Image (cartoon, rainbow, N blue to C red; front, side, top):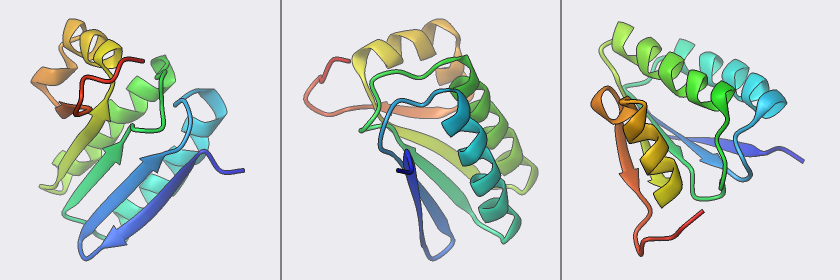
Length: 109
């Protein structure tokens, strides 16, 4: 079962993470995301609502996606990060380089 789904609305690519963003799923997502970026897009939105954990490979993917979008003058953003993820992202200063927003309702995870 795929751990993510990708949809396109006009020039915006939306990535819904259905499970934790770990290891092999990151590799599969990276290939799919690069293909979408290669077809031309203005923005990529990664929705972490289905994830409780993002490991170092998931964080590396987010940085790579952000860098890829910057190269084409596009935007990469992350939505629905849990409180715990927000703390980790802030301590790593990812929130300084990537637009990341927290889950509404203060959901922990």
